[in-house]
Image (cartoon, rainbow, N blue to C red; front, side, top):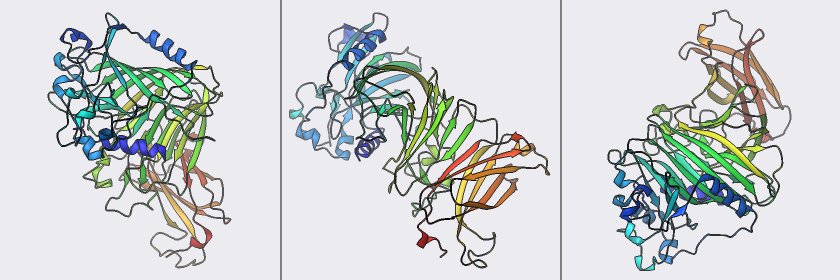
Length: 541
């Protein structure tokens, strides 16, 4: 799939923190003329919004360039060997907390991205023009004689404490993809500026960030502002990212002004893309030395009515799309809840260090839905999870929409339910008593067992004789043998139940579970989608 090609290339490149690109000096040091060597021109966000709006009224022009053969034919390892000369990075002479470098064009990165350095006091910007002298090509196999003209850049990355840590904490690379790290310094899932027709009656469209403008930070500052122009056949956009590089996390305050060139069937706001191969509940792809393999384990939603939802992720047998209707959501995100190394035993990709991504709307989003698309994946390099917000009102040509939101790249979201929360979901063979062999007493009965652990929310303070009632519902089949077991080791409770088929259907079964005591809700809501096997496979080994 086209999405996978973009993601695979993006992951392969951004994963190498030694990968480099181009550099430019801050607008504050224009006099040096070392990198920002374009003509001075006015820039502010009002101008950018007007420019994006004007572009939406004109036909789309595909800006992708034909790369010189020496760049077009590069393999990933060759591409990664291109080194950026850090002496020419954007804010090198500021010698401060932050610095910016740029990614080289090549391979599938054919969209030239234009970079500008902005003096916010004078509101003057100068373009940074590509030139080979900003790069080191040793061991990359690049014929520099072919690198003629201004090829532009593929994207950029931000460094924090560049003279000490020497690693990037944020990158924008490929289409409108970007990602950041938390205190572990480990990249994980990605975000997108905009998604169009991800699950629609037409081919998915990937808008591009084609220009960036950078405001230089103060010497000791850990906050900076970047503006972006987005372009695609169906839409244009003006974006402002106010990025706070904190010690524990990266927080981005985003303002997105989007203009529709054409009618858009499905608009994806605050899109995030991740990978789920296998976990505690879905294990058919876990035939490796690793107990679990995933960048994220659940979609978490804080609905507009205050309800908290936990939706464990799947690696389904076929593409699945689910829309969760809402009105002015309080937040949602793809979350990596388990950060225990023993859960993954991975010394290469370090899934225990992957950050979560949480979006918090800062403007009213109105009616719409949080959408989740899950694809089947056979390997951990193939992202298969996409989540985004879609407005309920159809988007037609000429529409202009504004969305404000914050993105939190952190180990866990900045907010959580005050109720008991889902810690772990497990599933396995059912239809028998624990401690007995499956099918030993009921050889003709087949069932699937689910166990959901709840923690927090005051469960640890409940009296030993407290009545806890699991409320379970399914869209097909029947539920039996519901049990509630206290788990002192986690200061919580486990709810288990068996699901029995009542037909030969292999359509997904939607399950719902929450805890209550008398008339009091004790927990967030667990939503799950189970894929029954074919009838001839409903038997024990």
